[in-house]
Length: 308
Image (cartoon, rainbow, N blue to C red):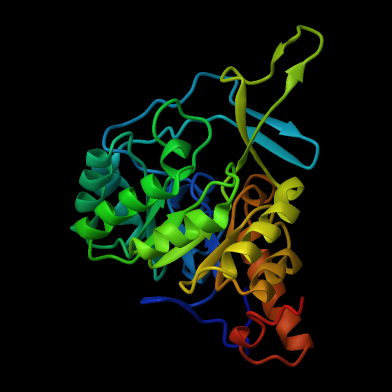
């Protein structure tokens, strides 16, 4: 059983107030219910659910996940049950818990993004939206919306106009200047920015001389990408004033604290959930322990203390 801590872990992402900075990363925690036997969902800062599209998606054909050195490649392709089924079948379960629910949304067109956003905005129990403009393993939409500042800004503005919920934009690292895209979506109305999503990669079966993934390429995640994620989060923090959420290779409390030290207000835990279903709570408790050992009473005292 978790013991009470004297450390204040609460953080604010603009108007979105979290009891602590530990969030789940979309696509790695299902719809929350899948992990309820392993994690007390009430302890999390926020659950970011699996990316939702207007209609159900089957995703890419298998094989679509494989382990790599220091990480994993995935080409799941945004398989999901669709926004209507989520509202009817999954959201009632999440509403039982005292945790912020963030819906990650995806569309192949501007119109689809808008329709999904409107449906979720009228559903009780959703506290914020996260726009996925950064998925590298779908044939349409996804990273194509996030690789051009003007297009990323346009989808942000359209979704912002369609919702009254706080809006987070999740950025792709598969670009030349991620900070320029961050600036564009901030100007377009993003309330917060999350980064990074996966890096495009591939793996070859030398015996058959064929790709390990049916999709050929997939998104690389895990510890291997943390140095890149830290660098990109740092670059973005120099250019925007909205809250930033750090993502990429976070496996331990120390990893999470590195992102907060840079200035990120929260973190999302992704690949670690596949290795250890209790990872989110282990990281949260490890962060609390670090603060207590260093006589820091409020998590906000460590945010932005990085000294270049």
